[in-house]
Amino acid sequence: MTQLAPDTQEMLDSLRTAVADILERKRRLGQYAVIWQDGKPVLIGDDAPPQQAGEQYSQDQEWY
Image (cartoon, rainbow, N blue to C red; front, side, top):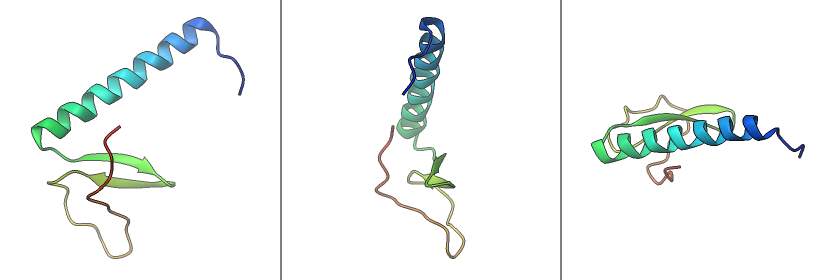
């Protein structure tokens, strides 16, 4: 993997922190989230709407 410039790495770290904070907030509020997993959008959370037949969904999905 190539080394990122320090300012680029700082921006990437900030974005990762922001996403993790938002996902944690949604989890605490009992809201579902849509994440990208294995090339497909996946709904995670207790209140996620039912998936269509053939779509992937896991109640046991870890929060990132």
